[in-house]
Image (cartoon, rainbow, N blue to C red; front, side, top):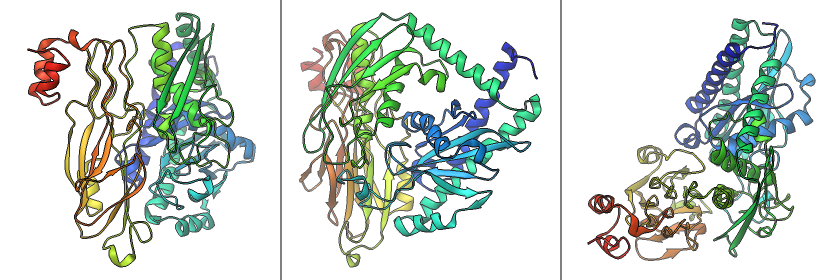
Length: 552
């Protein structure tokens, strides 16, 4: 196939390439040790050309991992030019500024060789359960507090694993089997991608993927230009106040639509925090680009051509462009808010199109029992360290209710209760939708959920949490009401702040009440039959039906 790729060949090869990266991702899910990867799908996987341009990504994965990985491979190639790599080499890092934004995510890159020449690269990322340091806490003051830092380096040379690095990892993390197991899973999934790509190239007589990559990327770029050209030109601004840590944080964005690009600038956003809610720019870029693409062209493949059509900027030193050595562990609490800023801007340009604000940031339960964190070793019967993924409600849409207990924009899956209970002494006594938490509107906001959790052993347990929407709710749109704020408390009555490490005493339970999404439109305009249905299903109370929706 030496001639320029035709329409049919391009489509066949594109479909095959998607199956290659999806098998790559599923290999990681199936071989991973941690629940973050195998249950929640908190991963990414993709194939890159020799220049480090992302050609295709797996559907399985999260925007924060996919879009940061899309930029990360070029950092690897700057340090390790592709001409210097050999078959069997594997590279790794968790550098927050060159990877995904915090130390808990490992990114692994592997070159693919055909006839002795590197023809492509495969990259993958996953969130590990522990990376040492103070643990899954937003309380760190510098990145040095947050755990083991792995610079851009070799994980394997010509097929031989870097046992020195693996030894350092084992010595610095609380769950060495899970973490090292996930590292092997990352390397294995890239090997799967490489093997399937070579099979594809042999089948179709390809000596390289350069022309295929150029075709895919250029067509995606052109499709983005055409989508942007149909939008109104101009600039619009939006802002949002969120809980923050030591003080509320102001997020401000200005979106500008030009002839062939969309620019988003975060000038005016609060400065960096003293705690670990800061965002490295790579993560800001990733979720802003995701928000823009969701809004204007969700049907276009996500690759280098698509991402190059979205230009993001933020002043260095603001909380969305935090420099080293700022603490960054909980960068997602702000990064996940950025699609709401994008929608707030675009709602002014294209009204009656975009959803109300949602919970956005995840309400993950990072639960731990360990000496020095939750008490003395003599008090702890079974040490454990687990993260279980959960979420509040999504904002209502102009013509549809918001989704309940759904992680947008993250896209991770909720971890089943049974999985968490099977690997720890944790008991989840209650997990149900939270009535009246969705903002009222012509379309109702998605509901949050309530969970009630304890340690079934007579032993203290801790919860690391980094929650948002506790003080400032998800706002409604077009006359819709705000969603309910969240709350974290003990069953015995004590209420906890939204961020930190807090201890659940033996015999007590932690109650997590997750926020709801904002409503859309005037609640009095809601269809009476839908109000009656919501009351019947326990989604809203009879009192809310009467007082907020005007039901008789």
